[in-house]
Length: 295
Length: 187
Ligand code: SF4
Ligand code: SF4
Image (cartoon, rainbow over all chains, first blue to last red; front, side, top):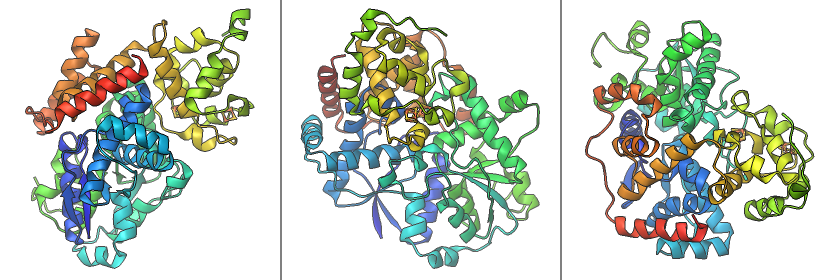
């Protein structure tokens, strides 16, 4: 199975651990990736909030390239996924927009690619048996709060691949590698997203509350699938602790890092040292890593 | 807060322009408030989503276009998901933000807009975002440091910010895309 890979800007920098662990996990279950030729940034909230046309043109450039390569698009970043998928659908449904966008990007583009998120590929296109077969050390006894955030879940109904208010795809994957996904109420609350730079106060309040509720529900660790969620939930825990007046310290890992751990992939693909709240004490206490091996 | 309903507002074509650009019928909204009930930024804003819609219905152009609340929306889409009338509220807010940039009024939350502009500037020059370019651009435009610069040393330490930014091959084409869109949107 081969896909056109759209890494997105975050996965080249602040979310390298997501990129490496995702490539590792996909490789382990036999998925081949070919990078989309000369892809450009999806424009994220900045384009979406300021220019409707730019927010369609930027994803269209990369989707048109994938169309040319004859590949379905696979992306890990929830923000890129949301922008690419929605643009692709809008262009497909609206001949007028299709014409305008093709003119602007100087490229024929029909909106005919399939845009898939890594969770969708792993949970739906790969058999659960293939994943189970790749697991070397099941994460027995690890309580995981799977956090989806808003971008994955709040697509227009027709495009949503999971249940909007109570998604389960990541839970299924976490279960497949032997850990225990928790039933908890904040799966799709918003973390504050792109306001992280200009409106910090809002983000600290929102993401702090998410970590707090996860902890109250017994989570050892939060599993995320979006670079912005990871950064917000992980980075502001000390500020959120001051705001809430209680200790948090819940490690926030990409779900692919947990899968890679269970599959026994090498440290360079796990990148457990890249997150702020150190997961090592917890993971060694649970017996998933032996002291310092992954440092 | 009280809003004065002047004759001018009642005769303004603001509502029609928002409806046209967003493709949404504002008459569909009956002010049930479900959009606002789920809005995560509610505690930090003055105008809730349903209030903004009510104000557009009433033609309060200046009050809407200069308020900072529309810039605090994270585009999470919860309001869309909950609206019993299927109104795309995020589209309406996108439209309001676009109109406020085109209008003679000063957008309400300049630091958010400045940040978005710095972000897009960076993409325009490299095709991809890089944190160094973004921070530089923001600091120059806004004359102040990004609030979470304090977190930057940590990213450097973990080798997460690369000092040599990636640049795409077809950067000239991208420049033409940006320029053409600016022309069309009249910015
Ligand atoms: S949920 Fe829909 S109908 Fe209800 S107030 Fe909001 S926009 Fe209006
Ligand atoms: S999309 Fe914006 S207005 Fe709607 S619920 Fe989210 S933050 Fe509030």
